[in-house]
Length: 151
Image (tube, rainbow, N blue to C red):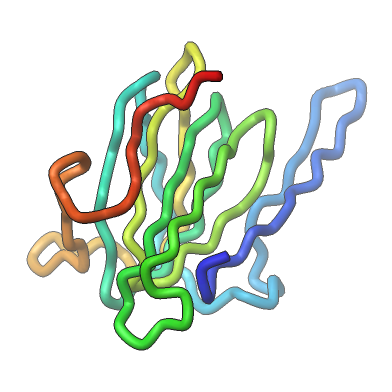
């Protein structure tokens, strides 16, 4: 696991009315601060990424559908520099994923429906000076191939 990444299994509490799932709490041991909450959608087979932040930590939770979220540690001095982590998250694997700043990340919609990802980053988006640094999804030096692995 990449240093600083946290995976929190989420508990689904069902009853005859439906279900409840707590995602993120201010008493979670990894809680740092609240910046904003937003929803992003990725269509099946589409790759969104790569990017990283210099200040912001992300907290990803796929609330509908399924997505493959991939992390790559490019941080100088990190004990896990160069490591890749792959997470299949969503309705079939309800988790909250903490992505530390400096860790490159991207996502791909998997399955047959769009995946809805809730992010609760530690910083709000600054339209004038965004803390977002992009890398091309396919043309790069990252040791990861977004193609589906059949077999």
